[in-house]
Length: 292
Image (cartoon, rainbow, N blue to C red; front, side, top):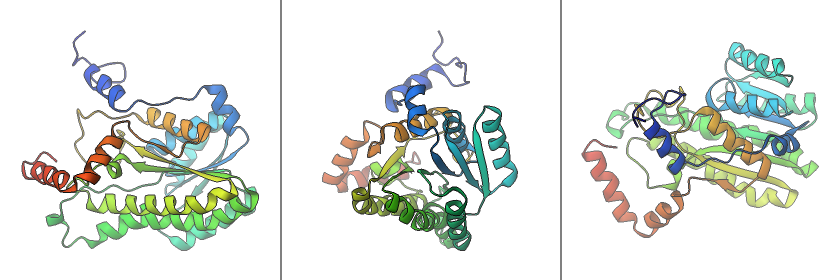
């Protein structure tokens, strides 16, 4: 077979093979996922598109009671309709996660209406790829990414965590980025800073809430071909489909590992920690050549 010929999902075979090698995914058995989430109240942010939509449908099909959060009421209702048509249960809550007062109100409303939340999938995110030379007059790039990727999720969890700790039950799944496991790449300063802030916050909080049986899983997600990544030309770059990303979320809620990350990021992170100067020079040369 011609290795450049498209496969059934439209991607070349060579890209699919590279994806499998670089980003192997763990797909839980249907029974295991059902046993883990059936009857559980699961909140997914950014549920109207991409990874959030795929994971909400997957968890809803497994019997979870889905609470869907995103900005667009119409798009949320479409996802909820899919879940209900498949026999599941879904409730929609339109929200701009950068409106921190509204986020707090929603958290309290969810607890009032449902009593508790079992699982939170922190998926809503904003990505910006822009060089620092193009950012001098765009401070709002940094405030927007911090609001969506860091401060909004923190505001939500500050509202939900007391209930989880009191019940001594709960799980938080954070959709982070594999970019935090390698040397910082050029043009991603706004995105990496915001994702890194929440990553560090959650890792610190996890050391406190674990004693109350509230657990966390951080997924250092590789590239996923979604509308969020579409503005950057990743054509030909190995990446996951939204269904494959949803499989990782299924793994996270079923087995509850501390983290899920591509296998090769550990050695790269170790090297960059020991040889930070060399890693920096490599990234700087790549930027100069226009390949980063």
